[in-house]
Each structure stands twice: as structure tokens, then as C-alpha cells.
Length: 340
Image (cartoon, rainbow, N blue to C red; front, side, top):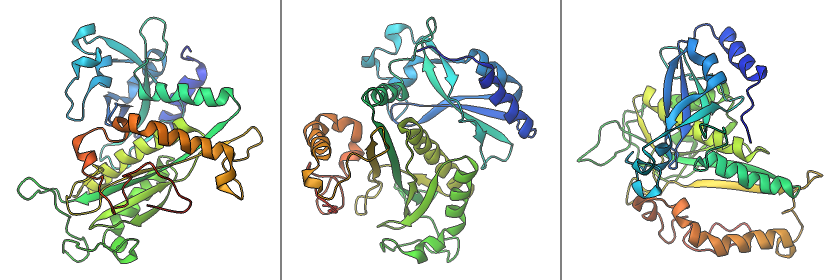
């Protein structure tokens, strides 16, 4: 699969710069294996060149652990001389960063081989693209949506541990564990509304915020889309948006699975359905237990999730969330309308 270098791509850059003459910089973004966004910042005059020739980044970007250290056993570090690959823009991901004081745009990138320009095998987005293609080949479309849970936290830790931020309204640190509390949403209304406004400005389909089960813990819901790649792009961009908007409001945020030992953990909820060629959801039926497609899908998850657990729980903190009676996925059972 070669990278299309068409006039349409260049036109996207030119039109954007015409619409936003104030833009000074463009952040070129690519998400690593941990969902950490990395890349380069360029001046606006260099943007057309990026569309034409791409930018170079080391392949070891996909060999980094959560601390940013290269995991040499991946074979993507010094074993190959820490060599570069070339990254090209993902169409229709060019947008403004509403939190920046100096007008700055952002653009998602994907990595390719230097010579033949084939997609780079270790890019998580390429791995997903291949999975999506297998569904497309049998006439199925993946529809997906994500829900991201996170904590707002104070920018000052106590003895190296996080603490909830003071409410901009009351000046007190929240202690409420009232799930779905509207009053708790009001305590941080300005920050939360700026998140929704920022998502709208970037074309991210965030359509709801709810208070979760711990102090200053919230969840943002993304609307479902019939493009699994785009759904993941939206999740990556929303996470970055939340972190930067919170910082603008003099708070930090964390998506880590268990920031507080005695409080609820943060989950990432993935909603998936499959449409056939007629647009019908093949998992839908009056009797779910008799739906063969649904039964096989659930059976496949039950069989393979234990082997795939390192993808769902990639570090020690992830396993701290796996406790009984905490709305955490501690088994491979399933139930209709049953959160246990």
C-alpha cells in the first residue's frame, strides 16, 4: 500500500493555512504503543513540505515503554542502528489546538518504510488497519466508540502522591464519591466545558461528560463512528486535549488505571458493533443468547482475552485495578445488561 501523494493532500494544507493565517506552528503527532503522543513541532511554512515528503522519526518510537526508555528486546532500537522511518500525514486530521497561547495546529502522522513507502509494521495504527481490512474483505464494517475515564488532580503532590484539586468554586478539595452527581460537575464546570468546546473545535465527537465514582473523577463519552481507525484517532486526540485543557485550568489529569489505592480506577470502555452490507448490526436480535454471531464473538473474547491481557493491562498499575466488586473486569464472564 503506497502513500498517495496527490494534489488533494497539498490542497488540504494550503486551504487550512489560508483559513488560519494566524497559525505559527504545527505539531506533527504520532502515538506510540502506550498511547503517548510524540512527534515534532514545525513552523507553518514547512507544512506543505511535510505533505510532499513526510518527516523522519526513529522506528524505536514504537519500542518505548511508559517511561520513555527504549526496550531493546523489540529489535527496533540499537539492533537496527536506531534507524529512521518516514512519517506521512493522515488525511483530515489537521486542526487547531485551542489551548495554545501561540496559535498552533496539529496533524496526525503514520509511519512508513523509507524505500518502498510501505506502512511500517510496528505502527499500532497500521496493525489496526490490517484488522479492519480483514473485516472489510468479508463485507463487515466496524462501528466503534470509546469512553475515557480520568481524574483531575492537583499540580502539587503530597509526599509524592496525587491529590484532588481544589474546587474553583468552593476552594475545597472534593471528597464526593457520588457517581453521576450533577453538583460535582458544576464544581469543575469551566474546565469540563472547555474540554467539550475544544473537542468540537477539533472535530472530535465528544457528546457527554459524567461524574464517576471518586473525587474529581470524570468520564467523557465519544459518539460511535463507522470507522475504527478514526474512532481510535479521536480517543488519542481527546486524551491529549483533556490533559492540556486541565493544565490551562491549573490542574493536571491522569488516565492511569489506579492513581488512588482506595478509590475507583480509571477504565477505557470500548463499544463495538458490526454492520453487514445492508447496514444491519449483526449482533442485534430479540434473543441475544440465540444470536450466533454474537455468541461466537463473545466466545472468542472469552478464549483470547487472557492471552491479550498485556495489551489491556500493560503495566503494574493496571493490575491494581483488578479487584472484586469495583466494576473492574476481573473475569471472562458475560451477561445481558449486567456490569458484574
